[in-house]
Structure formats: C-alpha cells, structure tokens
Length: 150
Image 1 (cartoon, one colour):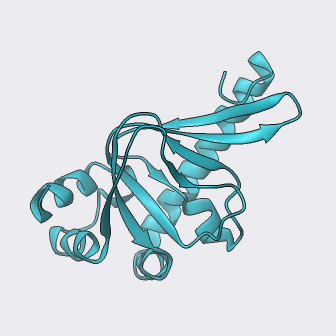
Image 2 (cartoon, rainbow, N blue to C red):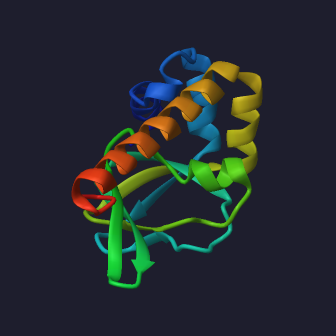
C-alpha cells in the first residue's frame, strides 16, 4: 500500500472526510503502517493509550474480561478509528483489541492525533459524535440482549 492508497483510505474515515488532500497526505506520512495476523493483539486492556488506529484492511474486535468470561464489546472493520478513547481521556486502554482477520492499520501517534484535533475542531466534534453513537449502540444492545456486542 502506498501513500496515495492510504490517503484514499483516510478520506473514507468519516471524521477525516473534510480534511484537504495535503493534510491527509501529512497524516498518512506521519503515521506508521502496521500489519497484524489473525488472532494477534493490537493492545491489551490496561496498556498505555499511546496511539489511535485506522483500520485499512481486515477486522478486529474489542474484548473485556467479565465474571462470566470474555465479552466481545465491539467489532471494527475498514475505515474505523479505534483506540481514540484512551488517547482523548489520557487513560489506560479500556478493552483489548484483537485481529479477527489479517489486519492492516495506520498507527497514529498520540501527539499527532491530539495535534490534529487541536488544529481541526471539526474533527474533534466528529470524534465526539462517533463516541456518542458507539455509546448509544452499546446501550441499546445491552437493553435488548443483555450483551454489549449482541
């Protein structure tokens, strides 16, 4: 995958959609492309929140340990942003994220991500909107099924 392909992928991430191509190129250039094999852990619950990730290819899920066993709380696919909650809150990871399939991501360093939000308040609003939607979906699933990933 080359820089242009990464820019096209970033354009499909809802919160980055309004950034001009030059900014997206800079974001892609300053991010690290990382591959994970199916079953490999991107990060564990409790880890330091040092980066956010954009999934370019593949799927992953978020898992938490519960008294009844491991619970899947979310599933992510291409063009999803993950790991941003811990970066924003400056807290350890709230869940473990594991690749379901082979996975290719752009790893956006915490400082780069926060600078992006500082320079472009519309992205910060889009991130907050996405977090609110995730909370609403999880709450609805809990009410309907008793499981956060039902």
